[in-house]
Image (cartoon, rainbow over all chains, first blue to last red; front, side, top):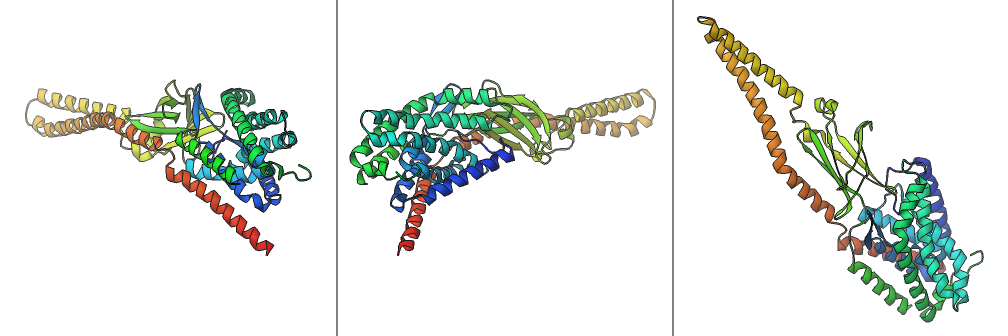
Length: 204
Length: 220
């Protein structure tokens, strides 16, 4: 899901930076300082998740965890993912510095979108909670794959080829992260419900 | 909060236990004679199959030639004539699809000493000329042959030297290229060190501390 340097044109990179900076600014602005440590921990989980990889056909994929970050952090997923990606670029040479903006947007935007859709179902609780948690964990992966493919529309590869490959390769990731999110959300709902409800601010 | 910490700590440990090197296209290339050999892979034993390859002039960015990697992620191309005559840095870019891309630069000095096929043939003509020269005076009677002989010998020596150099170059390339590959492979397989991983996590917590400090100052 990390787009390498030198693949995209300058307008796409610039648009990515604008959107990512906007989302990050919103995330920091709305951040309750009680939750700073939670953001850091989930950012650390995101940072390390990229090292867990398994071969799928001709390529290999790794965990992303953006859905988990979104459902717990809401808009704060933007700064968490941006800093995580910056560190991945510097330490692991995943992605790059010029593509940091677009990569942040590709992974954080679906996370926030799924947060907006599924958060109230998770707050509701009952039998709908695990289902909502599963989709909140799995769907952002698919949406990120679509966004990455959209970025590649103007390259030789084109949208359809990239989308097909990315979606197919990430099916196992979607399954794994859906299940992981169900477990973590159920666990937090039991022992620390305030983590999931704190973010209920107007407009979210 | 304590539960969350322990849960996430456990998660991190599980993740660390299965750490591996992924999601980066590795490319490396080396010179053998007048060819450049290139290999590319995603991670250990996972070659980039049918990846697009472009060879650029590193200084101008002009595309010199294009190709496709084979099933084992390899691609071999002959150094373009123009580059052999006037060595330039060759940038080899591999596009592995889905926005993955990487490059490797073959420096001009890596193949600057290579004898181009053209120079070999000149050496041969020189040698032939020398033989013809030495044959002609030998047929002629007298002292001129004696004067001609050293020149012919010299021409032969020059030709021989060129041939020897080319043969040595070839042999050395054959001997050294496995070593070059091994060294490159070692560099590629190194992957992220534990210090990188913990360094990153440390940065995150440091940043969080800074933010928390700034916010607490504001409150007072």
